[in-house]
Image (cartoon, rainbow, N blue to C red):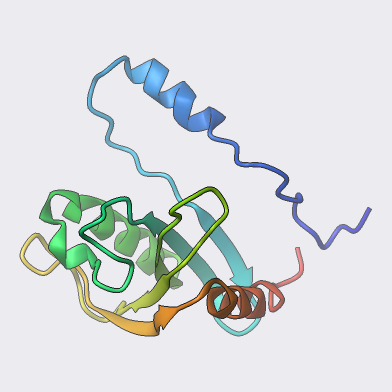
Length: 150
């Protein structure tokens, strides 16, 4: 066993999400889940939030947290966590028209110097403005391979 490697991802495990939904029993929930968090040699802590575009009217390239004012608290909380960890925060917009068939990606880095609020959700800059699965894979694997030893 290699002590430097995290557990291998074999399948999607939404068991914790189902558990919390059952615990809440239809009540409002005030927590957020973090999809990916790891530490790299160059960037330090890295947090990634994955945002699946599920509307035929919005593509990964046209979607931005500023357009979803109802979710502003989630993005503020993510920003706060990233600020505490002195980390990079990336938002990954993607679509999946059919299972494991990803057609378009947009990767944004959140500007940690600009404090968000209800009126100014978050500021971002595009890392990948309009990319393919291969573009995203190359970017992600570059960060993943630069992990800090555990």
